[in-house]
Structure formats: C-alpha cells, structure tokens
Length: 419
Image 1 (tube, one colour):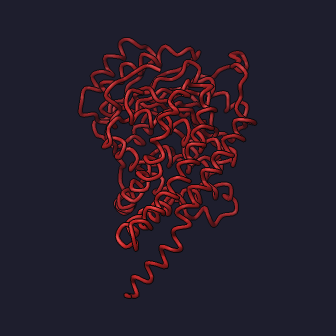
Image 2 (image 1 turned 135 degrees about the vertical axis):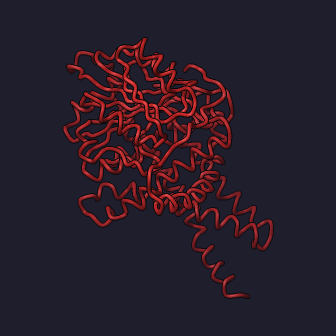
C-alpha cells in the first residue's frame, strides 16, 4: 500500500472526530449563549421616549446601482419619528440611474444630501465620503434596500448614553422582507437562529465578530480614532468591527433595533453573497492574527478561535467527504458515516433553530416558518463548507493585490413584500 495512502488514512482518522465535534460543540455553545442573553440582557420594557435628550444623527446610505430601491428607502427614512436627523446618500459610481433618482429626491426631502462619486471604489470608500460630510456625533449606516423600524434609531442611540463612553458601535437586528420562496424562507430562519444566536452568544462573551452592515450606529469619535473603514477589505462591516475592538472600543447588539431587508432568491446570488462574507472573515483572520499573542486583547481570542475553527472545519469536512467517496471500503461505510454525522448535527441544529426562533418571535412573527428549518441544516453546514473553501483563493489574491475593494449590487430577490 503506498505511503501517501497510509498517511491519508491517518489524516482521515484524526479529522473525522473533529468534523463531527466542532459544529456539535459550537451549536451547544450558541444555544447556551442565546438563552443567557435572552434571560439576562434583552430588555422587554417599553421604550421611554423621554429618557434622554435625543441627539442629532446622520443616516449614511451608500448606493451602487440601486435605482429600484433607493426611492422607497429614502421616503421611509424621511418618515421616521426620530426628532433630529439628516440623510447623506452616496452614489458610488453607479452605472444605472441611481444618481438621477437621488438628485430628484433632493427636491422633495430637505434633510437629504447627496454625494456623487464618478468611480465605483467600494462601500467602505462611500462611507468614508459620507462620514467626512457628516455633522453629527452619531452616524447610523443603513443599506439602500433597508426599511428601519420606526424606533430603531432610538434603540441604537440609547446605548451610547447608558452603556459608557467606550461604546463605539451598536448593531441592530436584520429581518427578512421577501418571504415568498424556499431560499428566502431558509434565510429567514438563518437570520433568526444562526446569526441571531451567534451575536447574542458573542455579546455574552464580550466581543462581536461583526456588526450588521445593513443597520449599525457608530460613535463618530470612535470611527475617527481608528481612521474610519478599511477601503481594501471586501466586507467593511467585519473589518471595522475588528478595528474598533482591537482599539478597545466596545460593540453592543440591540435586538429591538429592527431593520427589514431584501435577501437573494437565487442560488447564484446567495453563493456570491456568502463567498464575500467568508472572504471578509478570512481577511480579518490574516490581518489581526497578532491579537492572539496580546494579553490585552484576550477578550477577542474566543471569536478569533471560533472563526479559525469554522474555517478549518470547512476544509476538513470537504476533504473527509471526498476521501470517503473515493476510497471508502464499501458503500455501507460511507452511508454509516454520512447518516450518523448528518442525523446528530441536523437534530442539534433543529434544536438551535427552535430556541432562537422562539427568542426572536417577540420581534417578528416567524414561528410558522419553523417548517422551513428542516431544509436549513443542509444549506448551512454543507453548502457553507464549500463557500469557505471557494473564498480562500479570493482572500489570498485580495491580500496580495491590495487597493480598493469594490462591490456589486447584490441579488435582492424578485419580489419585495412588506413585513
């Protein structure tokens, strides 16, 4: 028997327990963290509109090829009951009629300002431009397809006054607007369970992997302290989260700050989105590896290790699966491996989905979508593994190349439905 085959067998024997145990233990960890956050930290009393003197804020809206959504977004932002705000919309070199739409809107909304960039240089650069033009201490960033809950800004801003001067950002709670297709309903379950439970758990630990780029508020002083967003990183929200926390600014999660958004409804759209997310996570791994050797940054260690484990798991799962398909002694061996691991992980994933949906249902009536959870483990655990593997070459190329990280207008679904 060739030596390489013996070495491969040993690798598979060592990798197989990791492939099973890593997601199993992480899922238990997320369930426990979500329950602790929900029990001890989620405020349930009504918002007191007189609790503070609400400060003036700027709402930053970066746009790239958003002529279909930007009019609705600006109109609904203008109707928010927050007492004092301006909207700064940045057209980032769009190739459609976004610029024309924004200039038309200026005539109707006196608190709207428009910045027109001739070149597409990425979302981070667009936010740079908006931040330089801002005149408020608190900046609320929203995507150009976002619909904020009427009191979302109130919920975000209050953290800056009640949680201390070191609060640099507060991330909100994205919700799905389009719910007509299998893919959108699976993502609805994901945002409530996987993303929601992870953010709650990370907040219990003390640090957060990433703010939600679709709805987040920043203290401008904190952004200036870290020299604003990194324009060479593909996901500006993940990058700025690590930048802030590496400089000892705190990030909070506010589940009552709801933001209704559109999600991709095609496999290609989801694939492109998830590859970009995975690339963003890998880029911060490469950039902030030194934090693992700094005792002052020890509170960031758990989320860095979690990110590393998730990345290594994806490569290990793909390797083990392909190896078993090619070299298993019999179809029964392959079937036993896939059946046992899949059953255990799917069962635990469904438990996590149930717990998380139960927690988030107080904000959004999503219990009836639990049926669609049956499809989700296949999508998340298995497809996500291939996404991480596909993102790695892009990450390496991006780190070697440098320059502006530009963006494309994402697939936002075929139909738009109100929440």
